[in-house]
Length: 175
Length: 181
Image 1 (cartoon, rainbow over the protein chains, first blue to last red):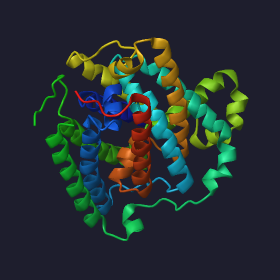
Image 2 (image 1 turned 45 degrees about the vertical axis):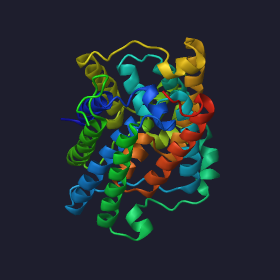
Image 3 (image 1 turned 135 degrees about the horizontal axis):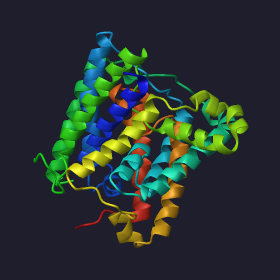
C-alpha cells in the first residue's frame, strides 16, 4: 500500500465516524459554541482520551515519535482567535466542511471556497507575518509535560478525571 | 445513555472513542509506511489545493511564493485523507438515510431566513477569516484540537481554548444567547 491509499482509507474511516457521530452539522458546531448541545465536545474529548493513552504508550515503546506543533505565542493566540470568529459564522471547521458536503449539505461549498481564498491570502502575506507576528516569541515544539514539569502519566489521569466529570455534567444537563 | 441518538446517529462518546483508536492506528501505519509519524489534520490541504488552483492561472507566482514552497503544492497523504472524509461521510449518510441535500442549515435559517445568497456570503467570509487564522496558528480543530491534545501539545491546548473562547463570544453576538426550548 502506498501513502495515497493509506491516506484515502484513513480519511474514509474518519469521515464515516464524523458523520455517524453527527459532528459534521452546522447546528452541532454552533450548538457547542452556544453551550446548548455538546455533541462535538463529547466526540472530541472521547477521541482525545483514547488517543492520548495510545500515543504515550506507543511513544514509550519507541513505536512512534511525537510531533508537537510550535508554541509560537502570537501565531497560536491571534490565529486561534481569528479561527474561532470565522468558525462561529461559517459553522464548520476545515475537515467538517468537507464532510458536510459529503452528507449532502452542499451549502458548505461556499465555506470551502472561502477557506481556499483564505489559504491563498495567507500565502501572500506570509513573508510579512514571518518578520512580525511569527517572530514575536516562539517557545518551540513543546508538550505539556515539559511546560508543566510533570510526567505525562500524571497529566493523563487528571485529564481523564476532568473529562469524565464534564461528561457526567453534560448528561445531567442534557446538553 | 443510548447507543443511538434520536436522529439515528451513533452515540458521540462511542464514535469519538473509535476516532481516537483510528488516530492511534493511523499514527502507527504512517510511521511504518512512510517512515515518519503523520498525525490527523486537514487544513494544510487547503493551502495545497489553493496552490494547485492558482497554478492553473499563474504558475510562476506559485513557484516563487515562499509559503507554497514551504508546504509543497502536491497531492500527499493528508490530501487523500481529506478526500476520504468526503467519501466516508457520503457512505455513512447513505447507510442511515441521513444524507440530505441542504443549502441553508436550520439554525441559520431560524435566525437569518432561508435565503441562500446571504448564507453563502457569510459562509464564504467566515471561511476566509477562519482559514487565515488556522494557517497562522498552524492547525485546525483536527490538527491542534484532536492530534495536538492527544499528544499533550502545549500549542494544541492553547489553540483549542482560543478556538472555543472566541467561538463562544462570536456565536453569542451572531446567533444570540442560549435558546430555551
